[in-house]
Length: 215
Length: 215
DNA sequence: TAAGGTAGCCATACGTTGTAAGGTACGGCA
DNA sequence: TGCCGTACCTTACAACGTATGGCTACCTTA
Image 1 (cartoon, rainbow over the protein chains, first blue to last red):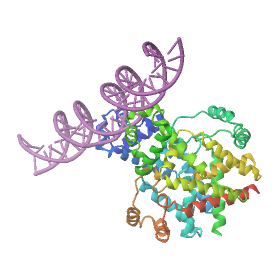
Image 2: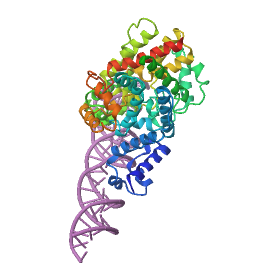
Image 3: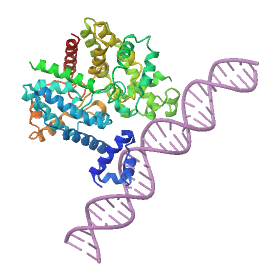
Image 4: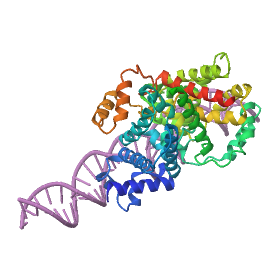
C-alpha cells in the first residue's frame, strides 16, 4: 500500500461513481483495507482531495506535446490538451474549484503559460490580466452555469425543455433562443452546453482580444 | 417563524461565519428553535441551500436600475451591479457553483440578458455563445483559481509570497510577473486577485470581442 | 359548546461521516 | 534476545442530516 496506489484507487472510484462516493471507508474497502489504515499514507480526507487534484494536474502536465506556432496557437493547443484530461475526469472541475488554495503543482504549469506570453511581448501586467481572463480555461473547462458538473448527477435535458416550455410566456427571449439552438447544438460533452465548439469559441474570443490588447 | 425568516437568518449566518457554519442545528439555534422545526418551513438542507441561492438571485434582480446606452453599456452596468451583491456575500459564488441545477429564478434574469442582445441584432446562435463566454460574469464574479472563495478561510498573501520565493528558481516567468504585479495591484476585493479592475478588464475583453463578432 | 383536526414545535434516535486513541503483528537492528 | 518503528486494525466519539412520533394551541364545524 502506498500513497500512489491510494490516489489511483480514488481516481478510479471518482471516475466510476463520482466524488460523492469517495469516502474514507469506501476507498479503503476498494483497497481491501480498513478506513483508518489510509491515515498512514494520507493526512486525512482533505489531504486525499488535495492529492487527487494534484494527480489530475500531473495528468494535465503529462499530456504536454510539442506545441507549435505563435503564442496563440501554442496556448490554444495547450488548453485543448488539458481539456482532454477533464473529459476523462468529469468530477475534476468541481474538485479543483473546491480546493482551499491552488495546488503548488500548478505553479510550473502557469509559469509555462506566462513564459509563452512574455516571450511574445506581453507585459507582466497584461500577462497577469490574461491569466485572470482565461479563468479555468488553462485547466480545460469553463465554469458551467446550467447544470454544473458539481452534482455528478446527469440532469435531464428533457426536464429543462419542459420547464422552459411552461415558462415560455414569461421568457420570450430565452425560449426563442433555446428553440433555435437546443436541437441544433449536437452533442454536449461536459454537462449540458459545454461542448467542444463552445469552449473553443470562448477561447478564441479571449485570444483574439488579447492579441489586440497586446498591440 | 417563516421560510423567509429562516432564509434571512441563514444569509446572516453565512455572512458572519461562512457556509461551513451553516448547519441545520446551528441555524435553528440562531432562530431559537430546534433543528427539526426547520423542516416545517424548508424541505431539508438541500432545499435550504436552494433557497439561499434563490435569495441571492433575488437580491441581484432587486439591484436592477435603469441601464442606459447600447447593449454593451447596458450589460456592463447590469453585471457590475450584480457584482455588488456578490461583494456583500462572499460565500455566494461557491454556493451557486455547487447547486445541482440552475435556480429557476435565474431564468427571467437570463431572459433579460438575451433580450438585450437580440434587440441589438444578435442571432440566437451568437447570443447563446455569448452567454457561455460570460460564464458567471452576469452573476458578478469570475471563477477564482488562486484562493477560490469556496474555502471561506482567508489565505494569507504573505504565505504565497513565501511559497513563490522558495520556488523562484524553478518559476522564472511567474515570479517575474508577480514581482511586477503583486505590490502594484492595490487592494483585491474578492479573494486574492479578483479585483474590480480585473473583473472589468475581462468583461470588456469579452464585450469587445462580441461586438466584433456581431459585426 | 364540544369534538376533531391541523399547524407548529420538540425529543429521541438512527445511519453515515471524518477521525482520535490505542492495540496487535512483524521485520530489521542493536 | 530485546527493542522499536511501520503498517494495519478495532473501537469509539462527535457532528451531521433527518425519520419518527408526541405534545400543545388554535381553528373549524356541527
